[in-house]
Amino acid sequence: MFNSLKAAALSVLLTAGAMTTATAQDLTFFTIGTGGTSFTYYPVGGVIANAISKPPGSRECGKGGSCGVDNLIASAVSSRGSVDNINAIKSGLRNSGFAQSDVAYWAYTGTGTMEGSEPATDLRTIAGLFEEHIHLVTLKGSGINSVADLVGKRVSVDEPGSGTYVDAGLILGAYGLSFEDIKEENLKGSAATEALRNGKVDALFIVAGYPTGAVVELASAADMQLVPITGEGVDKLTSEFGFFSVSDIPADAYEGVPAVATVAVGAQWFTHAREDEELIYNITKALWNEESRRLLDVGHAKGSTITLETALSGIGVPLHPGAKRFYVEAGLIK
Image (tube, rainbow, N blue to C red; front, top):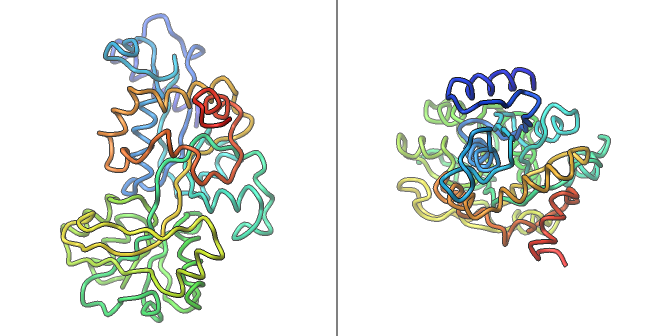
């Protein structure tokens, strides 16, 4: 996979005329596992990959050029989501990836939904990114106005290997339900929202930072509603699992859809302990460069919430030594 990425990247550079004396040996390639292309992870991953990359021939930082890591080419890779990304980091398939804070903690400790699996003790954190809200989506007139109303309904809970699948199970459990109480469908992104629009499913779960593309498209094409996740079930969920927080999706995050109370988890960026300390230090430094701030602010609606001040919020997996060195220098760690 990495050889094909090298070939593709070199082809682009040669075509653009940006490459002079650099060779494949001079370049460092760094992959970021994200999620489905119609969810938030993928476009945010693209913005971050752009921010930390600095191919040969780039203009200098501060002079209209990249402030990324010299000779680094980072790429955002579409994936099945949190669990898939963690497994890919463990196996060496990807250098890094995004995952929900809960999924990562369970994987690192071998507890919770990962009980019985070998703990991913070499998982390391680069940064906390943004809040991901649990979206329970249906159409107006469906008769689904609470989690309890999902009994017997056709519900898409995303694919096994995704954080959405994990959290959907936890939410159902908090209300005394399980996957056996619904007619489970395992659709992803736009395939799930299209199935809802066409009456093939009655509701769907999506865990993503708002606004997420698949739901934006649905709201513009159908009378969609977000189902509140509230009450005793939420009290049980937040008391049992500290990584869940109560948080609203605001009005008009999706066209014509009023504000709704729900729960959220943190989206975080992880890598492997074996990754070079100097490389991860420089990647972390590039992520929080002031020039990168501009890219984050305009690259995606969620980008403005990705800040250095919240980079260590909700971290449950140890920092990579390279990232930790940067945060010490930045004064976030005493």
